Amino acid sequence: MEPLLSCRSVTKLYGVVIGVNDLTLELEPGVHGLLGPNGAGKSTLLKLITGQLRPTEGAIRVLGQDPWNNPSLLRRVGYCPEHDAFWKFLSGYQFVATLARLSGLGRAEAARESERALARVGAADYMHRPISSYSKGMRQRTKLAQALVHDPDLLILDEPLSGTDPVGRHELMDLVGELGAEGKSVLVSSHVMHEVQAMTERFLLIFGGRVLAAGDVHEIRALLYDIPHRIRVVCDRPRELAGHLAARPGVDGVSIEGEELRIETREPRDLFALLPEIAQRVGARVRELASEDESLDAVFEYLVGDGR
Amino acid sequence: MSALFALSLRQILGGRKLWILAAFLALPLLLSVAIRFAGGVEFAEDPNVDIEGLAMSAFLYLMYPQSLCILAALLFGASLLAGEIEDKTLTYLFTRAVPRWKVLGGKYIATAGVLAVLTVASMSMAFFISGRPFGLRVWWALSVVTALACFTYTAVFALLGLLVPRRAIPAGLIFAVVVEGLLSTVPALVNELTVGYYLRSLAWRLADPPLPTSIRADFERNVAPLFVGASTSTALFALGGIAVGTLAVSALLIHRREWPLTEGV
Image (cartoon, rainbow over all chains, first blue to last red):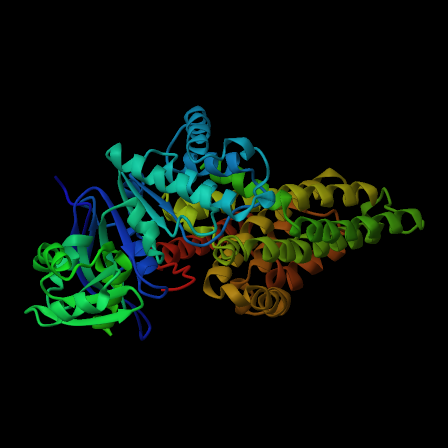
């Protein structure tokens, strides 16, 4: 199977500012989240993938082809840009139909597929109104529809949930999941971790123009063996529990705040196995047990801290 | 291409700039009405004494190909792609299965075509209001030259808009005044490098105004070689060459250049 994306030592400079820095990676087809804070290089990477920018150094291949100035590749790619730009004198339907025509669809097919794409993103009710009257959420949906309209193999979505209300956010996250289930490849960027986590389990973590880690959250966490794993325990006897745990090999530290005990360990599996027995021994009733590091926030915090 | 053409048409016809163009094009109409109803110019049957007809034709030439076509082309041509860059809508056009040169071509044809239709329509109204100086031959010549001025200047200003997108209008005005206004009238080789020289030559050849024999002979001997020296075919070839050449450079620029429309990195 041809890789979705292949980057070999890709660097993109804007004058002396680094957008992407010596990036090497290969992505297989599927849904991938591109995660990083603002200015991390996400949009630059997506612009390189969609052929709007050319690498200063290195080579990039998308679906096996060089994306720079490559209209035939763009027929297979749908791109939803980050910025809120439209021809606002058009209706949502006209906007999507125009871009469908530019993707090579005939007039009748463009009309049919535009209606289908707009209905799919939940924009059918207002698609004949001028875009100038749309809310930010409506515009986001319309932008997403134009990326979908020509049924591309690869969807590049740059911050697609920005400005949407909670219901819309949920619907659009479900849509990304559906597209993945249909066999489409999706690369979706966000700086909001839980959004990405809700759409996919496979991530690229990018910071300072570099990919800090790639894989699913568990794989990424496994890479970080040297970084203590944080476990939170809420129980009625945290001091007694802490006393037994602190002396254990592999436990790097414990701290107590009220009924909450925070444990740092490099051997989380061993600790999870031991905890019930120790809790029983000290007579502690555990109400909550959670690994904070299973959240992407925590992983990203580690990685960015390390990257800095 | 038809989708791009339709999009461009809507952009032109739905934009605020159309009102500015309408104001530009209304000016010579008002002047023509004023001249006509103030009992101004009368066009004699005998061409030997038709100095007023010549003056009115010159007025229409100066108003349209020499002034309004330049301003209209600057207004719309300079923002042909620069407007899409500024509005960040170029992203949509350059991430579709359309070669970039076709994006430029589609927008150019729509823009220059609309400008040509509107300016020729305005010129024709002014021509007929003012009493058809020298008859339909002059109208035909002015129509052709006005349309060609729109196509040529739109191509020139489209390139300017790509070279200096943020300063295209002031740069275009300087170009209009210095190159097309002053240099095109300098009786030396330099005026052959201007669009105005070929438009003027073409207008002269196509209109072939019926001047008194003595005036014509004097004009052909002393003035024409300096100011309207190009033959019809040379003028058409030069105007076509300038339009195609500047469009080709624009196409090359947009093909090679990146369009980083980033809000962040």
